[in-house]
Length: 311
Image 1 (tube, rainbow, N blue to C red):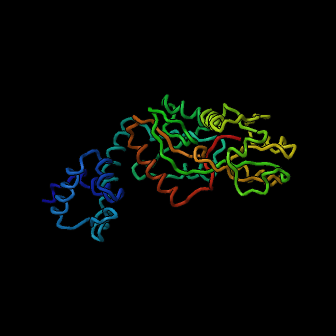
Image 2: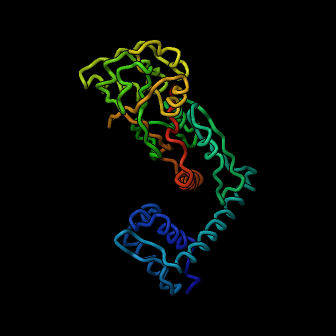
Image 3: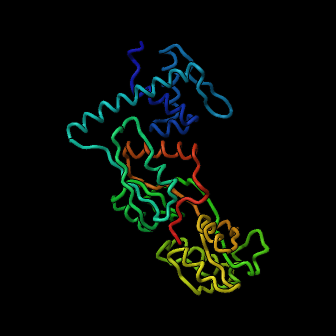
Protein backbone atom coordinates (compact mmCIF):
# COMPACT_ATOMS: atom_id res chain seq x y z
CA UNK A 1 0.00 0.00 0.00
CA UNK A 2 2.88 2.36 0.72
CA UNK A 3 3.87 2.08 -2.92
CA UNK A 4 0.70 4.03 -3.70
CA UNK A 5 2.22 7.16 -2.15
CA UNK A 6 3.47 9.69 -4.67
CA UNK A 7 5.74 12.74 -4.57
CA UNK A 8 2.57 14.77 -4.98
CA UNK A 9 1.27 13.30 -1.71
CA UNK A 10 4.40 14.40 0.11
CA UNK A 11 4.01 17.89 -1.35
CA UNK A 12 0.45 18.07 -0.02
CA UNK A 13 1.61 17.11 3.46
CA UNK A 14 4.43 19.67 3.44
CA UNK A 15 2.11 22.38 2.07
CA UNK A 16 -0.40 21.79 4.88
CA UNK A 17 2.36 21.93 7.48
CA UNK A 18 3.83 25.18 6.11
CA UNK A 19 0.51 26.93 5.55
CA UNK A 20 -1.23 25.72 8.71
CA UNK A 21 -4.54 26.04 6.91
CA UNK A 22 -6.41 23.62 4.64
CA UNK A 23 -7.78 26.54 2.64
CA UNK A 24 -4.35 28.06 1.99
CA UNK A 25 -2.65 24.71 1.41
CA UNK A 26 -5.29 23.64 -1.12
CA UNK A 27 -4.98 26.98 -2.88
CA UNK A 28 -1.19 26.63 -2.96
CA UNK A 29 -1.24 23.21 -4.62
CA UNK A 30 -4.15 24.08 -6.90
CA UNK A 31 -6.90 21.65 -5.87
CA UNK A 32 -10.25 21.98 -4.08
CA UNK A 33 -10.47 21.80 -0.30
CA UNK A 34 -12.62 18.63 -0.29
CA UNK A 35 -10.16 16.87 -2.61
CA UNK A 36 -7.25 18.05 -0.48
CA UNK A 37 -8.80 16.80 2.77
CA UNK A 38 -9.72 13.46 1.21
CA UNK A 39 -6.16 12.90 0.00
CA UNK A 40 -4.60 13.83 3.37
CA UNK A 41 -6.90 11.36 5.10
CA UNK A 42 -5.95 8.67 2.59
CA UNK A 43 -2.24 9.35 3.17
CA UNK A 44 -2.72 8.99 6.93
CA UNK A 45 -4.50 5.67 6.39
CA UNK A 46 -1.82 4.38 4.03
CA UNK A 47 0.99 5.00 6.51
CA UNK A 48 -1.19 4.31 9.55
CA UNK A 49 -0.06 7.52 11.28
CA UNK A 50 -2.00 10.61 12.32
CA UNK A 51 0.00 13.47 10.80
CA UNK A 52 -2.14 16.47 11.75
CA UNK A 53 -4.42 17.74 14.45
CA UNK A 54 -7.27 20.06 13.51
CA UNK A 55 -8.24 22.83 15.92
CA UNK A 56 -9.90 26.24 16.07
CA UNK A 57 -6.56 27.93 15.45
CA UNK A 58 -5.76 25.92 12.31
CA UNK A 59 -3.96 22.70 11.51
CA UNK A 60 -0.79 21.58 13.33
CA UNK A 61 1.46 18.60 12.75
CA UNK A 62 1.63 15.93 15.44
CA UNK A 63 5.01 14.78 16.75
CA UNK A 64 4.79 11.83 14.37
CA UNK A 65 3.81 14.23 11.62
CA UNK A 66 6.86 16.44 12.24
CA UNK A 67 9.15 13.43 11.90
CA UNK A 68 7.42 12.38 8.68
CA UNK A 69 7.48 15.92 7.26
CA UNK A 70 11.21 16.31 7.86
CA UNK A 71 11.99 13.32 5.63
CA UNK A 72 9.19 14.15 3.17
CA UNK A 73 10.70 17.61 2.65
CA UNK A 74 14.12 16.11 1.99
CA UNK A 75 12.68 13.57 -0.46
CA UNK A 76 10.84 16.30 -2.36
CA UNK A 77 14.00 18.39 -2.64
CA UNK A 78 16.03 15.41 -3.84
CA UNK A 79 13.39 14.45 -6.40
CA UNK A 80 13.13 17.92 -7.91
CA UNK A 81 16.88 18.45 -7.69
CA UNK A 82 17.42 15.29 -9.73
CA UNK A 83 15.12 16.60 -12.46
CA UNK A 84 16.50 20.12 -12.25
CA UNK A 85 20.14 19.12 -12.47
CA UNK A 86 19.41 16.74 -15.34
CA UNK A 87 17.94 19.66 -17.28
CA UNK A 88 20.83 21.92 -16.34
CA UNK A 89 23.33 19.31 -17.49
CA UNK A 90 21.51 19.08 -20.80
CA UNK A 91 21.44 22.86 -21.31
CA UNK A 92 24.81 23.53 -19.72
CA UNK A 93 23.21 26.34 -17.69
CA UNK A 94 22.98 27.40 -14.05
CA UNK A 95 20.02 28.96 -12.26
CA UNK A 96 19.90 32.74 -12.07
CA UNK A 97 17.59 35.35 -10.56
CA UNK A 98 17.72 39.02 -11.46
CA UNK A 99 16.34 41.11 -8.60
CA UNK A 100 15.68 44.83 -8.75
CA UNK A 101 16.21 46.88 -5.59
CA UNK A 102 16.10 50.53 -4.66
CA UNK A 103 19.25 52.51 -5.24
CA UNK A 104 18.99 53.43 -1.53
CA UNK A 105 18.39 49.91 -0.19
CA UNK A 106 20.00 49.33 3.24
CA UNK A 107 23.03 47.08 2.96
CA UNK A 108 21.52 44.64 5.47
CA UNK A 109 18.61 43.86 3.16
CA UNK A 110 20.85 43.47 0.12
CA UNK A 111 22.96 41.03 2.10
CA UNK A 112 19.80 39.09 2.98
CA UNK A 113 18.79 38.98 -0.69
CA UNK A 114 22.13 37.49 -1.64
CA UNK A 115 22.32 35.09 1.30
CA UNK A 116 19.22 33.06 0.44
CA UNK A 117 20.08 29.41 -0.26
CA UNK A 118 17.70 26.97 -1.91
CA UNK A 119 18.33 23.21 -1.62
CA UNK A 120 16.98 22.62 -5.11
CA UNK A 121 19.16 25.32 -6.70
CA UNK A 122 22.60 24.83 -5.21
CA UNK A 123 24.37 26.98 -7.82
CA UNK A 124 21.84 29.81 -7.81
CA UNK A 125 23.28 33.12 -9.03
CA UNK A 126 21.71 36.37 -7.77
CA UNK A 127 22.09 39.49 -9.90
CA UNK A 128 21.11 42.82 -8.28
CA UNK A 129 19.84 45.70 -10.41
CA UNK A 130 19.42 49.04 -8.58
CA UNK A 131 16.94 51.67 -9.75
CA UNK A 132 14.03 53.81 -8.57
CA UNK A 133 10.80 51.96 -7.79
CA UNK A 134 8.88 53.22 -10.82
CA UNK A 135 11.61 52.04 -13.20
CA UNK A 136 11.85 48.68 -11.41
CA UNK A 137 8.13 48.07 -11.96
CA UNK A 138 8.58 48.83 -15.67
CA UNK A 139 11.52 46.43 -15.91
CA UNK A 140 9.49 43.79 -14.08
CA UNK A 141 6.58 44.07 -16.51
CA UNK A 142 8.95 43.83 -19.47
CA UNK A 143 10.53 40.68 -18.05
CA UNK A 144 13.97 42.23 -17.61
CA UNK A 145 14.03 41.27 -13.92
CA UNK A 146 12.38 38.43 -11.98
CA UNK A 147 11.64 40.14 -8.66
CA UNK A 148 11.75 43.65 -7.25
CA UNK A 149 11.72 45.32 -3.85
CA UNK A 150 9.63 48.45 -4.35
CA UNK A 151 7.98 51.02 -2.12
CA UNK A 152 4.25 51.80 -2.10
CA UNK A 153 3.60 50.52 -5.63
CA UNK A 154 0.38 51.50 -7.41
CA UNK A 155 -2.04 48.70 -8.23
CA UNK A 156 -0.98 47.12 -11.53
CA UNK A 157 -2.92 44.14 -12.88
CA UNK A 158 0.20 42.55 -14.33
CA UNK A 159 2.11 42.75 -11.01
CA UNK A 160 1.51 40.88 -7.77
CA UNK A 161 3.13 42.09 -4.55
CA UNK A 162 3.63 41.06 -0.94
CA UNK A 163 3.88 43.80 1.71
CA UNK A 164 6.92 43.24 3.93
CA UNK A 165 7.04 46.39 6.07
CA UNK A 166 5.22 49.66 6.70
CA UNK A 167 6.70 52.91 7.99
CA UNK A 168 5.83 56.58 8.20
CA UNK A 169 7.45 59.50 6.43
CA UNK A 170 9.58 61.68 8.70
CA UNK A 171 9.19 65.45 8.64
CA UNK A 172 12.57 67.12 9.23
CA UNK A 173 13.25 70.72 10.31
CA UNK A 174 15.50 72.98 12.39
CA UNK A 175 15.29 73.10 16.17
CA UNK A 176 13.53 76.48 16.12
CA UNK A 177 10.63 75.27 13.96
CA UNK A 178 7.09 75.60 15.45
CA UNK A 179 6.62 71.81 15.16
CA UNK A 180 9.73 71.06 17.24
CA UNK A 181 7.73 70.56 20.43
CA UNK A 182 5.38 68.03 18.85
CA UNK A 183 5.65 64.21 19.00
CA UNK A 184 4.07 63.75 15.56
CA UNK A 185 2.44 65.79 12.81
CA UNK A 186 -0.54 65.53 10.48
CA UNK A 187 -0.60 66.50 6.83
CA UNK A 188 -2.84 69.47 7.65
CA UNK A 189 -0.16 70.76 10.03
CA UNK A 190 2.78 70.12 7.68
CA UNK A 191 1.15 71.87 4.72
CA UNK A 192 1.22 75.17 6.64
CA UNK A 193 4.97 75.40 6.01
CA UNK A 194 7.12 75.53 2.84
CA UNK A 195 8.53 72.15 1.75
CA UNK A 196 11.79 70.63 0.68
CA UNK A 197 10.20 67.80 -1.31
CA UNK A 198 11.41 64.83 -3.36
CA UNK A 199 11.42 65.04 -7.14
CA UNK A 200 8.45 63.43 -8.93
CA UNK A 201 10.74 61.27 -11.06
CA UNK A 202 11.88 59.49 -7.89
CA UNK A 203 8.45 58.09 -7.06
CA UNK A 204 5.59 59.47 -9.23
CA UNK A 205 2.86 57.55 -7.39
CA UNK A 206 3.82 58.73 -3.89
CA UNK A 207 4.59 62.25 -5.10
CA UNK A 208 1.16 62.62 -6.68
CA UNK A 209 -0.63 60.86 -3.82
CA UNK A 210 0.74 63.33 -1.27
CA UNK A 211 -0.28 66.35 -3.35
CA UNK A 212 -3.73 64.81 -3.92
CA UNK A 213 -4.14 64.38 -0.17
CA UNK A 214 -3.17 68.05 0.26
CA UNK A 215 -5.87 69.03 -2.24
CA UNK A 216 -8.44 66.96 -0.33
CA UNK A 217 -7.51 69.03 2.74
CA UNK A 218 -8.40 72.04 0.55
CA UNK A 219 -4.85 73.31 0.88
CA UNK A 220 -1.94 73.92 -1.46
CA UNK A 221 1.62 72.83 -0.85
CA UNK A 222 4.37 75.41 -1.18
CA UNK A 223 7.37 73.51 -2.58
CA UNK A 224 10.51 75.62 -2.61
CA UNK A 225 13.03 72.86 -3.42
CA UNK A 226 12.79 69.53 -5.30
CA UNK A 227 15.44 66.97 -4.36
CA UNK A 228 16.80 63.66 -5.57
CA UNK A 229 19.13 63.06 -2.60
CA UNK A 230 18.43 63.61 1.09
CA UNK A 231 21.91 64.86 1.90
CA UNK A 232 21.02 68.00 -0.07
CA UNK A 233 18.11 68.73 2.28
CA UNK A 234 20.32 69.53 5.25
CA UNK A 235 21.96 72.34 3.30
CA UNK A 236 18.61 73.74 2.17
CA UNK A 237 16.88 73.86 5.54
CA UNK A 238 18.22 77.38 6.01
CA UNK A 239 15.48 78.85 8.22
CA UNK A 240 12.98 77.80 10.86
CA UNK A 241 10.00 77.81 8.50
CA UNK A 242 11.05 75.04 6.11
CA UNK A 243 10.24 71.31 6.48
CA UNK A 244 11.78 68.42 4.51
CA UNK A 245 10.20 65.06 3.67
CA UNK A 246 12.51 62.12 4.41
CA UNK A 247 12.50 58.40 5.01
CA UNK A 248 13.37 57.21 8.55
CA UNK A 249 16.95 56.17 7.80
CA UNK A 250 17.75 59.51 6.16
CA UNK A 251 16.06 61.41 9.00
CA UNK A 252 18.45 59.68 11.40
CA UNK A 253 21.41 60.95 9.36
CA UNK A 254 19.89 64.45 9.35
CA UNK A 255 19.81 64.36 13.15
CA UNK A 256 23.61 64.24 13.06
CA UNK A 257 23.43 67.76 11.60
CA UNK A 258 21.32 69.04 14.49
CA UNK A 259 17.98 68.68 12.68
CA UNK A 260 14.79 67.47 14.35
CA UNK A 261 12.34 64.96 12.90
CA UNK A 262 8.96 63.52 13.76
CA UNK A 263 6.63 61.01 12.09
CA UNK A 264 3.86 62.03 9.73
CA UNK A 265 0.65 60.36 10.90
CA UNK A 266 -1.61 59.80 7.92
CA UNK A 267 -3.49 56.60 7.11
CA UNK A 268 -3.23 57.22 3.37
CA UNK A 269 0.45 58.24 3.11
CA UNK A 270 2.65 55.33 4.13
CA UNK A 271 5.95 53.80 3.12
CA UNK A 272 5.09 50.21 2.29
CA UNK A 273 7.91 47.94 1.18
CA UNK A 274 6.67 45.28 -1.23
CA UNK A 275 8.28 42.27 -2.86
CA UNK A 276 6.91 42.24 -6.39
CA UNK A 277 6.84 39.87 -9.36
CA UNK A 278 4.80 39.43 -12.50
CA UNK A 279 1.34 37.99 -11.90
CA UNK A 280 1.86 35.46 -14.68
CA UNK A 281 5.22 34.25 -13.37
CA UNK A 282 4.88 30.50 -12.73
CA UNK A 283 8.58 29.90 -12.07
CA UNK A 284 9.21 27.35 -9.33
CA UNK A 285 12.53 29.07 -8.65
CA UNK A 286 10.84 32.43 -8.02
CA UNK A 287 8.21 30.80 -5.81
CA UNK A 288 10.79 28.95 -3.71
CA UNK A 289 12.98 32.04 -3.40
CA UNK A 290 10.11 34.27 -2.25
CA UNK A 291 9.01 31.72 0.36
CA UNK A 292 12.55 31.38 1.75
CA UNK A 293 13.22 35.12 1.66
CA UNK A 294 10.07 35.95 3.63
CA UNK A 295 10.91 33.27 6.19
CA UNK A 296 14.45 34.60 6.64
CA UNK A 297 13.26 38.20 6.82
CA UNK A 298 10.86 37.35 9.63
CA UNK A 299 13.72 35.70 11.51
CA UNK A 300 16.14 38.57 10.93
CA UNK A 301 13.98 41.67 10.68
CA UNK A 302 15.99 44.48 8.98
CA UNK A 303 16.03 48.11 10.12
CA UNK A 304 12.76 50.03 10.22
CA UNK A 305 12.79 51.49 6.70
CA UNK A 306 13.65 49.16 3.89
CA UNK A 307 13.48 50.43 0.39
CA UNK A 308 11.95 53.80 -0.37
CA UNK A 309 14.12 55.03 -3.24
CA UNK A 310 14.04 58.73 -2.44
CA UNK A 311 16.50 61.19 -1.02
